[in-house]
Image (tube, rainbow, N blue to C red; front, side):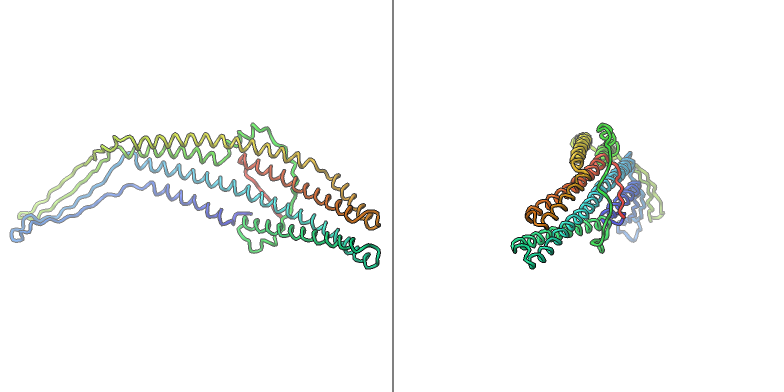
Length: 381
């Protein structure tokens, strides 16, 4: 559904970059070919003239393997970072979908209230011109009609904005305003014990994998830098052809070992060891943060569930019958328009609170799944 999102597509390219880095890390150091010409400038005797060829290569011990190890661990971290991005992306997309469903429901409620008050206002206009009610009653219903219309227009704007946001997640906003997702905010999920959720989160959360991989990378860099401080070996072979009379060829071979006195300095090693210690501490901090997020999400879901349980279908239907009876009582002149309007507004506010409660519970469940590290799937008709 959301595979065309541009940001998600760009993030996936990080995997290709990491794979290319792994391939690049496997390269061997190149040999060196040197060619030189010598001449003592005594052209008549043809002495001291020659041409020299030399082939040399540096050999390091453990450096290439260490470079490959770092690249491989960085690739694994890149995969975990992409999984973490997708985890957050799915949660945000799911919340956006729930907000769109809520906006649809809110638009229906505000439209219903506007239709009810509009019908009363039209009827009051007829009754006023017949002389059945006072002008103040007619003006009062007209004013309520305008307020209800503005509330409906505001709900309509919110519905379109949530549809546009869904278009963003889908990667195409060309016709996003025409999107109209269908679905329900009602869920009947029963949470498992929190200890199980914490255990699952520590095993599943990609951000913990990222933190642990950072420690692995720090350890790999420590080994790599240690390998770089080892003595290198330069092997060379060559030949020199001399143009003297008689001419002759000189062969040579040798090795060179750099004396790395700089390796005696412990500063770089201390930096590597401290970075490794820091990465391990941050991994422990990541575990603690995951536990905190799961506990908070678990608590929020319990609270949201209690809020949703405040309402019931019977309560809403009873309130609807009360509104209908008050409307008839007003039309019969038994109560004032103000008394009817209060009941109408209370019923509308209660329905909006009910919708908010359903949304809150559904969103809290999404956040709990997000905290655990589960994959989130969503469907839209």
